[in-house]
Every structure is written in C-alpha cells, then in structure tokens.
Image: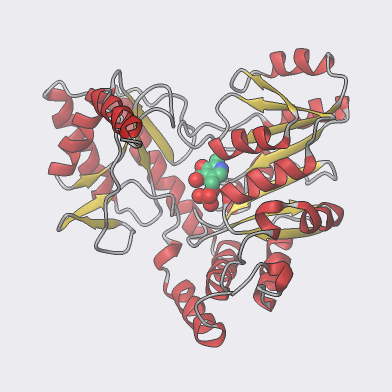
Length: 385
Ligand SMILES: Cc1ncc(COP(=O)(O)O)c(C=O)c1O
C-alpha cells in the first residue's frame, strides 16, 4: 500500500509516546476550559490577559462582523484589506513607538515571510538555539547562511559575529516560548551596533506581558532603533489572531512588495482586526491587567519553588516543570486532568526535555493557583514529579 510508510511512522511515534491527537474543547478558552464534558482550570492558553473573552473586545469584533462580513475575500494586495487594517497598524506603531507597522495573518506567517524577505544568500543570520520553529523555518526559507548560537550566550555570539563577512542579521525570541526566560536584549543591541547588524526580535510572548504590556524593549528601557524590527503576535496576550512587524516605514514598504506569506494569502477578516485594536487600546489604558498577571505569576512561581519542582529558567508567566521522560510528563498531565486541571505535556519536537508548560493568566484566581499547587503536592507525594 502506498501509505504504509505513514503507518510505520505513526507506529514509531506511538512507541516513543510522541503521537499527538487534537482535542476539541466545548467552551471558550479562558480561566476554565471544557474538554470531554469536564470543566477544568485552564493553564494551557497564551491568552495571558484574558482579552479573548473581554466584553469590549468581543463587542468590537461583533460590530465589525456586522459591518464587513465574515471573510475578506482576497489577499490585501487585491483589496482584501479594510480600513481597520490601517487603523490597527497605526495603533500598533504608536504602541511600539515605531514609524510604521504591518499586520500578518499569524506569527508563523510573519516570521517565515519577513525573515525570508530581509535575509538572502548575502546574509549571515545568527539565531538563538531556542528560537521558535517559525524563526527556524524563516531562516531556512531565506537561503541565508544560519549560525545557531548557544542559548542567550552573548560571548559566543560576539566571537562568532567577529568572523562574519556578509550582512548580519541577529534574530531572537524575546521571551522563549517553552522556557519562559528572557533574551539579553541590551547586549544584543550593543553587539548589533558594534557590527552594523540588523536585529529581528520575536516579541510574541513579550507583547502584552513585559514592560507594562508594551513589550520587551520597554522592559529593558530600550528605544526602537532603525536597525531593529519588532515582531509581535495578536494571538496571545492580545487575545485574537494574527501578528505584526513594527519598524521603519521602508521595512513595511519592502515587506508589502516581497513577503510571500502576505502577498499570496487571504487577508485577515475585519472582525479579527477590530478585536486586536480594542485589545491594544485596553492594554495601553488599563495597567491593572498586566499587574494582575504578574502578581499571579509571582504567587504560583514562589509556591512551585517551595515545592522543589524544577521550573528551569522561567522569568515570566510561562513556567515549565521539567521532567525526565515522555512517559512521566504524560502521566503527570493526566493526573492533573483527573483532578480538574488542564496543563499540556510538551515533548519533542517542540522541546528537547519533556515538560509541563504552565501558562499563567491575569484572570486566574488565587484559588485556581493554589489548587494547582495542591494537586502538584499530591502528585509529588505519589512520586509523579
Ligand atoms: C515565539 C513565537 N513566535 C511565533 C509564534 C507563532 O505565532 P502564531 O501562533 O500567531 O502563528 C509563536 C506561537 O505560536 C511563538 O511562541
């Protein structure tokens, strides 16, 4: 049979405990989530501020849905875009203090499209070893020589960059999505200044989270530089869908003319843009939401540390619990599920070391956090972590 090779591969995944299935949820994702008829406390979502279900975000989307309909019909270059695209981009440029911004259909589309549009065979890309898969794929698509440097290792980056001959691009996540630690952006920008490098930061998990919500640059007290491109997602703390790149106007002009994931893909529908625009407005005006997120993160992190769990390098609301095997992490995730808590097990190829990936949100209650801690305590007594 022609498809037998797939069956063999799937069997191999099963043997290694790496086979995935997709689960349906029967509720909005938020503080809680309903799966298989069970209401669970949800620690799986990147909706860090609970904006996906915020009443004014939903109202803005509904209004745009009424006005513009469900779909956009074509690529933005064929007039699939609306005035809401432009308005959101103006809002995002103000949010990130840049000249301009450009919206993409997803973070994946932004990274693969932008990196392959700004790097080519005359470029050397320096990429952190724990960068997101969409960055890795963008580097591959660009056909640039890519040098992977050890995670957050600035001495090695410095040493490697000294030897470069071509145009240089440094690319890094700001918050690493599976470890929750933060890139040393100050050092990276200094190295870039010294060697005339371009810098591309993926602020997917920094936007709405770091720097009072404005992202990683604000967190470090850094200003946007002409040589810096800031990518952020609208799909995580901002609660809807899509992504953006913010920077100099010339970058946006180049992107509109060259980025294949933008040119050859149908534009996001207006209601998604309306939701994002309202979400950015909320983050810019309501500082309490981000504070609540960090307060929750600190409560949980302190408790997990006291329990003696291995939370790796976490510095943000992404808190991993590192485990030794796929078997162990699946068992622990199932144990939590049985007790009303949803925390996904993350395994290869997303990470080398299996882990539970806990995502804390501003909308979790103190009781939610302490319930998770209690169940983990019980799991520890049973020898599960
Ligand atoms: C660091 C990082 N970059 C990019 C993406 C892709 O974003 P999106 O889900 O909007 O495609 C993700 C998450 O999925 C991410 O964690």
